[in-house]
Length: 182
Image (cartoon, rainbow, N blue to C red):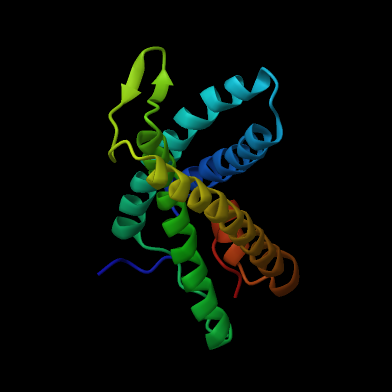
């Protein structure tokens, strides 16, 4: 059984905030990629691919740390429905953080494109070359990006609600690791 604690560990906070920045950057780079046909498009692709793999590796590490360390419990006075929504929204976030890079990698594999990390380092394809599969995965990648954006907005809204309205320590447990106020 995991020990009870009132705040996230330093490693959990570091992973959370690093990933938050990377995911926001990734969303903006992705929008930029589809919104431009200029020479910047290739630069954005060169950023998007390794950034996606970095997010994939970090979310795997984050899941391992979360399984080992757990998370602080939610306030006892928080309504049961809000607690359920909070837990489900975290599952959705983790699922999307895993799915997006895997679908992107699969999409590129299906299109016959390599996933270039840096220099000449390429990842192997994870699905066979198939134009129909590529089209399906590309659409799925786009729709899940919208879902991730909306989920991140909901997460941010909930964090602000806890930090500014409820002031129940939920936000501060991730923001600076301070113990919850009584």
